[in-house]
Amino acid sequence: MTTLDNPVWEALSTQQNNFNIGNKAVKYFAADIAPFIGLQNWDESDLQQLKQHAPADRAFSVMIAKKIQLPANADILFTTPLYQLYCPVLLPFTIEAIEIKTLDSSHVAQMLELTAITKPGPFYEKTIDFGHYMGIYQHDKLVAMAGERLKVNGYTEISAICTHPHYLGKGYASYLLSQTCQHTIREGNIPFLHVRTDNVRAIDVYKKLGFQIRADVYFAIFKLGK
Image (cartoon, rainbow, N blue to C red; front, side, top):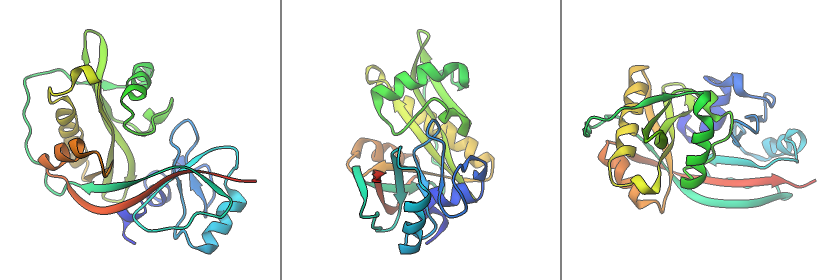
């Protein structure tokens, strides 16, 4: 597997190893940051480690470009196929001048409210600790946002891309995605992201900015039985 095929494991093993609250074999984020858990190979040996060391009192998410078999005692709560896209060359995108704010902990309440409405993926109280989130405000209300999440060697995942339903069609998501990608590229990394395979509207937006589909990704939310 390449670096991007197993991004959770790679992130917690390299650029974001400070977030790992598991051990060397079973790596995962704190529950108030992200639900993701990573194993190096997801083979039988790894699954034994998972059953032994992963807490059974919380749900985890797996995201990997590989067909895997979860343990027999795992209760799969939700699963859906994803595409993983990356952006080797960012294409230009222009929009009528609009102010973007850098989001910090003082904005978390509105970020949680927006993601609860739009459901771009898991976003919790301390997800902002991943760093560099940007947003657009209208009438003192956060109406669109985007940010960075997983970081592996040479690549940064763009995440939490969302727009309030009342403000769709204005190009806000594309603009924020473009600006966030530019920040990622300035840091010397290539942007990548994940999207549900049935989210045709979002995929079209990403492709217009230069993103290309590179892999099919297995995604599932599961909880280990006792």
